[in-house]
Length: 182
Image (cartoon, rainbow, N blue to C red; front, side, top):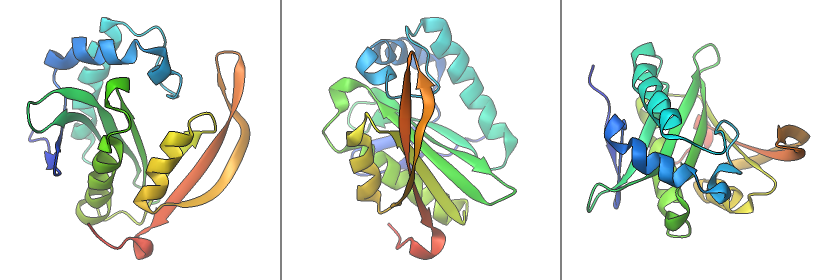
């Protein structure tokens, strides 16, 4: 199966291979990264990365547009994080998710990668709506989502339990009619 490859000015989004398992493990062993992610265990181990990458490759076989992309620096192919779209074909919408290793925060990479994914979702997958959310404890992620132009739609109070804490989730969304292109 041919996996899509998406490019932006500084990044390449492509399906990760097992060759990035160690790099992924190292990035996700940082508690500052994992505490902001709903589906990532902590501590994170090499076996977790290998299983995730194998599942990521299988996701594209669903042929519903669901996708997980490794985020790589275009200049030297360094793996720096992940992004993707969970797709609901019944409702023709996607939920965008992303993470970056801490060393890559604050450089605009998350905005650049997710903007490219937004283009892919609306222009290639022809989605009607794309949603995204973040924990209230991660306002930097909220800033990325706002830069994409998604509208704040509400807060799910104490909705998610992470460790022994209940976290609020801020929900955002964009309709195809609100999308103004790349």
